[in-house]
Length: 178
Length: 178
Image 1 (tube, helix red, strand yellow):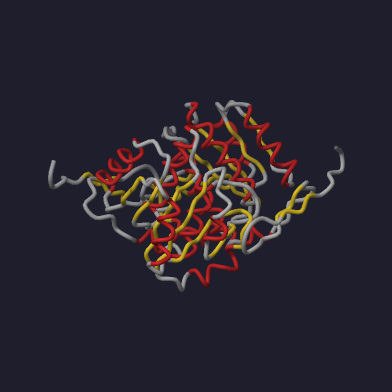
Image 2: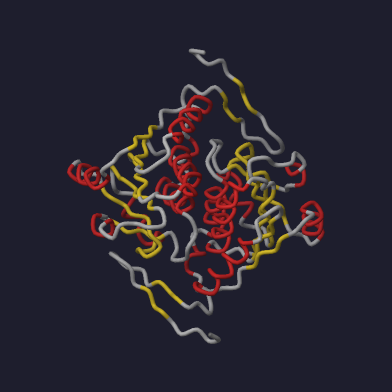
């Protein structure tokens, strides 16, 4: 399955760090790309550095018109999943979501435009209690993929962790081009 | 099973918002309590407001000596789980963790004291790629409880969400004492 993420509604500087964590979760849990608006461009540098160190081809694209993007994705048969504490329970929706081929997961910051509820093919609640868009995205991607995202190797990494009982075991590889 | 959380190593103001999200995840995913050090005390007010609005008895305690706390918890037969990207895979450890009765989950900020790896009964990696302590905690609690945490009612809430396909459906209740 192909996962893309759209982060919208970010307006406050204090959201920068949360948005960075959203992007890191997207990458670590197997999404191919994140689109963002109204974002501090430094976040691209942060994620590029993570790709260089830890591998993979995760992409960030900064956009200005998120409605246009959603329309294009819908035309391309990509299903729109909106994460919201007001939606239907993830416990009920996962079997349907697992049957989809291409999805765009919309992750809102505190204020989300009302229209997104109607654009969405699924409004998914990861519980009906307030927590965090970071945790909501992670649990959704984990459930859909049944944990198999953690078996994926990230290609061309400079470092690789060898899981270990105590402490840290990291392979430092030579990188090809620097 | 009884879950408690210990957040350590927070030093930077920029971690305040992340720590708030960690506490919200702990509450929404069924932990009874979070212990924190070096934290902005406003976080207690934030969580108390969440309890008033959305129910439950989730507790925050600000502590000064986290090593002492871990020792007490170990004496009380509580198992110590440390979340770290360097640990053993969550995919392998969940069956063992599900058999425990009382656990303390240690959630470190960026710099974590070396000793914690030795104090821990389990060093658990929610994948071996960098993401967020918020997502790591959420996925761990979700996996151990198999999603059943979302069936729990939070008692004495002023508001309750009725899950719905589109938009928001919230019951506004009368509160008892205000």
